[in-house]
Image (tube, rainbow, N blue to C red):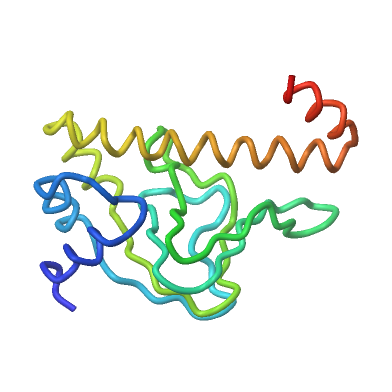
Length: 163
């Protein structure tokens, strides 16, 4: 598939829904298709994070390596989800592992390319950051609930939040 053919794929991905066409056209220059086999890592904790992924098919496990337990799954991502925001924040390093649970198809977006485009087109930068901020908030809330379930007290905190 040629790069110019990725515009319709980007426009249809839930993460980019409603993004102005001129910005989708800018993203195409930073995008490529990628397939991952079952068990293959999309990223590894501690490695350089210069990309993010728009998942098209398959299941990805986001894991944290613990010396006593090995990889502990924190989240499961599927078609329509986004993996990775570490490309946005220096030192651009992955904080988790992400492994293909099934074969995965994804659009890979080059972070260095995007950072350059965002520095010249602040509106694009705003649109992308606003979308990533929403994902960060959702994932932090999910992590908070997992910790509450793990360490107890979830019922008390949830009932207090309901007030």
